[in-house]
Image (tube, rainbow over all chains, first blue to last red; front, side):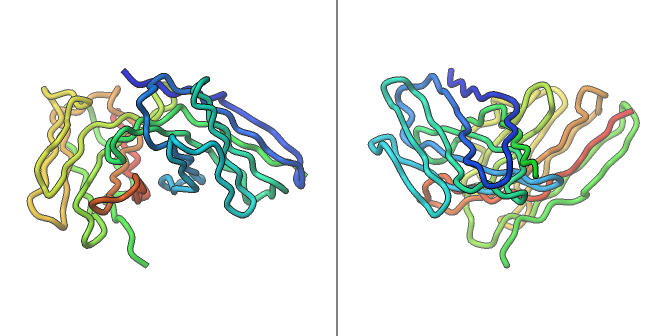
Length: 110
Length: 114
């Protein structure tokens, strides 16, 4: 079955770039996503990328996809304290049933 | 601002009791999901519906869990009888048809079974 893995924790200083990594096992994944969860809240979609793309940029966010290695990354430029949250990678073949990773807790220090 | 509404936000109950969690999806969204979040297992898909019909409930323990959509504005998740291992945050999410997998999550129900 599908499996999505992420490291559990990342700490960065305010103003630095953050890079959160994810690996997945299903080579037929068509859609790959990054969701953000703030304390006490549900998840919110940050960005997504189709499997036929290598990169997507959206303001401070850059998503890189290496389909050969089944590796997805999210780079947050100029990380702010408000970016502290849990970030989930997810994949889907059909854009309906999503499989989420374990989540990476990002801590931003002053 | 359209949002997914879940009730209750918090529920503390004793082992063996019935628990009912409710979700009001965003008006016009035809796909509804139930997820469970724990520290050990992360986010697990329990069940999902499209146009009120169950499409997949393979993630749900069938002996004690049931999920229904009595109408387009209400989804319910019931646990009977509840057990301490059911303690978790239960999220409902909805999505529009034909979308790209943008799920709109509710704030969750934090369930503690003592």
